[in-house]
Image 1 (tube, one colour):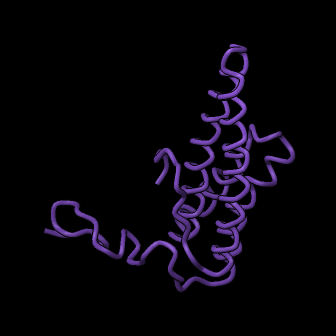
Image 2: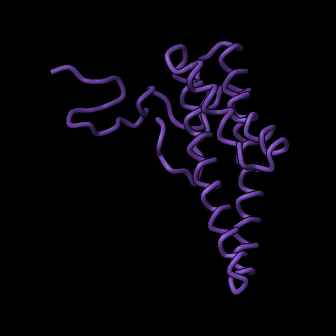
Amino acid sequence: MTQQPGFQQYGEPTPGGPYGHQPGQPVPVDSEHRTAAALAHASSLIAMVISAGWLSFVGPLVMLLIYKDRSPFVRQAAAGSFNFNLGLWLMSIVGWIFIITVIGIPIGLILLAVSFLGQIIGHVIGTLRATKGETMNYPFQLKVLR
């Protein structure tokens, strides 16, 4: 029986994860892939400025499509950034729904503030880690892409 790298028998992940490294630890990648991974994280911040946050998931999705077969490091960065953006994007929608109901304005404002600050802080940390060759494991993400 053949095993996937990074997985023990019966699909249990090994301590090194599917790519053989711990999250947050430096990975041996070249500068092109570090730059592409940093761009996958930073593209969300750029899209937040251009589209007020509504298209923040497009940049990581484009990077994933370009690098999915070329670099597991960039694929992981882009997928994590996309999943994180998707979760915070949905949080923003729920926040706006609360605001529209008028009674839920305080809750809606809190959700929007958490979403906004989470995107900025998370993507800045992700961009800085990617430039060092480290992976980023976002705290709140909907695992849609891997």
